[in-house]
Length: 202
Image (cartoon, rainbow, N blue to C red; front, side, top):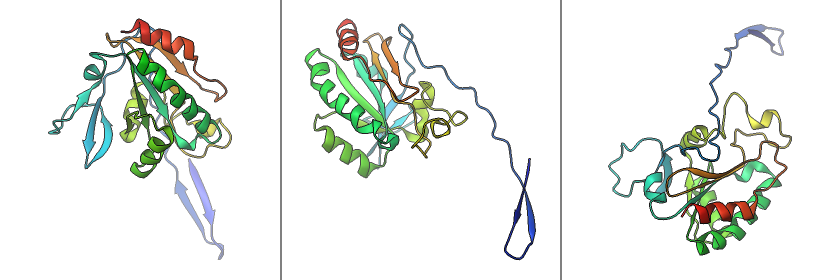
């Protein structure tokens, strides 16, 4: 495809636009599926995700380590969701102590900067670990991020590449006990179902 640009002097330049190569989007895991594997590590003091364990960091932990003793509630979150973001964060804040009381744990993955992650942590005030999902790798493996089907293309008010609001409950067997994916930004996770999945996943 060619695109012509004319400057103030009337000079016309022709640019060839490369077509975006369509990637095959991963389907999100459903209830009963084995959750995709990922790792958590520190990169220069910044908590980030990784899809490989090739790291000298002794603090490297995998999802297997996380669910070994406690079910895990995994939430993908982004400040750039506009008015949807604070509601989602408030829901997580209310959910955190209930999950902990049932013997579970909560983890947030975001695409925000280190400074923003610190701000989110202060807003939550719940001791929930927050990791930067480097290059959207984990979100992509969970089917909640795709460059070829961007959210800004279909949801008004969002102008960045972000992942879909989503939350998964993973049992100690790494099986998904509950999956919430809000494609249209018009829903909220079901708290009772989340807590039941945490209880059942112990």
